[in-house]
Image 1: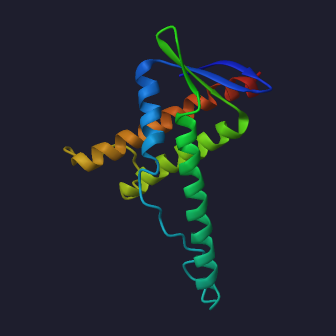
Image 2: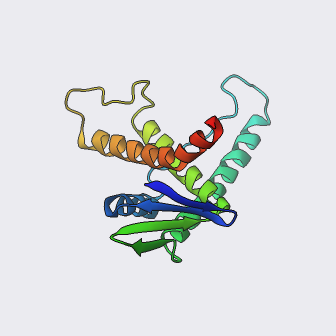
Image 3: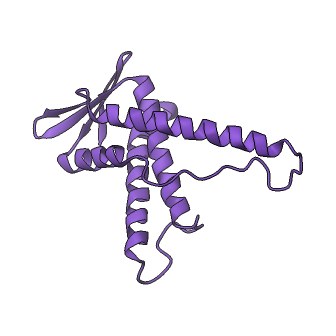
Length: 158
C-alpha cells in the first residue's frame, strides 16, 4: 500500500490485490474483538464513579457502533477502484481519520485478546491457533496504520 496522490479533496492509495483483500476483510469483520469495559479509576472511592463509568462505556459502545457503520461504508461506495491489476483506495480526510481509528481498535483489541503482552511476538514455541490469528490480525492492522502514516513522516522530516 502506498500513497499515490494527495489533494485538498483527499488521499489515493494503491494496494496490490492481496493488500486490498486483507484491508477489506479487516473492515468487513470490524469489530474483531468484543469491546472492553473501561474503568475511570482503580482506586477512586467516589460513589458517583459507577455512574461515570456507565456513561463512559455507553459512549464508547456508541462510538464503536458508529465506527462499524463507517467501516462498512469504507468497503463500499466506490472507495476501492480496480486499476491496472491493482486497487486504488480513494478517501477524504474524515474517512482517513476513521480508518486510523478502526485499525487502531483492531490492533489494540487483538493485543488485549492476547493478554496485553509486553513482547508482541508469540510467547510460546507453539502458539495456539487463536493466538496466531490475533497476532496476524494485530500485525496486519499495524501494517496498514504504518502505510497510512509513511508519507507524513517523510513530509515532517523535510
